[in-house]
Amino acid sequence: MRHHEVRQVMTADPVTVTPATPLKYVADLLVSQMIGAVPVLSPQGKVLGVVAETDLLRKEELQRDPDARHSAHLNYRARRDLVTAETAGEIMSPAPVTVRPGATVAEAARLMDRHGVNCLPVTDESGKLLGVVGPRNLLRVFLQSDDNIRADIVEA
Image (cartoon, rainbow, N blue to C red; front, top):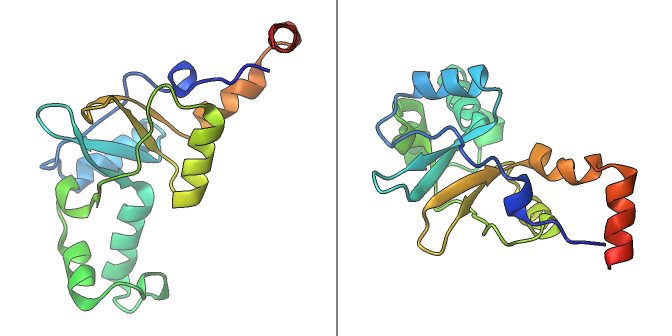
């Protein structure tokens, strides 16, 4: 059976933000675009980080309950920085796990599972964003017609 590549299922023109993007705008994007995370890019288009909906929820939780058990692993300074964050650059997960467009769908799924993320920026060798891939993208390989699946098996 043919091994589908990330380039075949990725979202090629994803929604992105800059480090200076206000968190209120990030939250609006996540809700209005029905996405779980957004890459944070440099002016040159390189991936600097990712802001996930869980980052914003953790910030909200800490504002309401500074001793929140879900954030018990954070030290005082990290908690303070999270609570006072106002921009994507202040809350993003830096140096996110990325994937190359030629990786297989199975490799991307393993990366997501291993690192506990739901969004993988797809980058070229220089770190420039080419697209993003998430669980929904990866599931597309199961939506092939029976004829396509049969052709893949015969081809293999």
